[in-house]
Image (cartoon, rainbow, N blue to C red; front, side, top):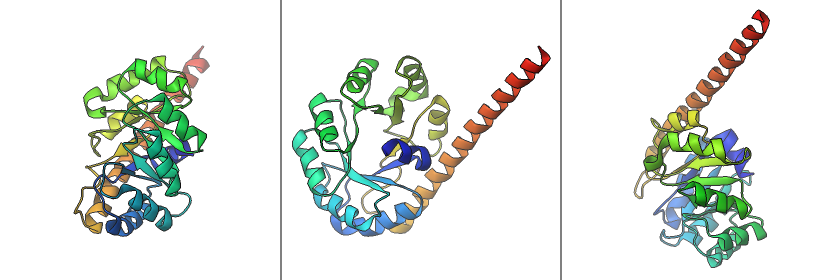
Length: 227
């Protein structure tokens, strides 16, 4: 489901620092702007309570869960709160397998090809590339050349509406967006404007990629005709 959500909607919203009373207004805004995956990092205040509230508020077509998940106990907490998404800063095999065993969507974090292959061996096909702003689109493209064809890379860290287009062109399967989308204390209107900018940029990037693909296919067809 996570792969489909990213394909159709582009993003995981990372609500670092949000508090339970703030979740309703922010969740409704994000859903209205097209977000279908939301996570609250485990090191946020009362994170599990916030996840439970988000699950009550958001429709079932929206993934809800936790980020900065580093232990199997935290996986259990997410499941108990009704969450179905686990996002990790690392690729711990035991945490990955705990999430898979409970039927949760899991996105482990990797920063090197070695970490990427190890996480894939643990049973996932989607990987969080972190920190994306330091690694850059060129690294993403190079990794995709050697990783299995079914692998999807999700850049997280420092992504902005301006930089995501380059990552899309390099082959990004989606994005995790944190402080550029939401910071504690932001109003619902501010979150809406931020979410809208990201969605507009993502749609623009997808359109450009389709245009490049169409032009490439057209050139190939013309070459075949000339032969």
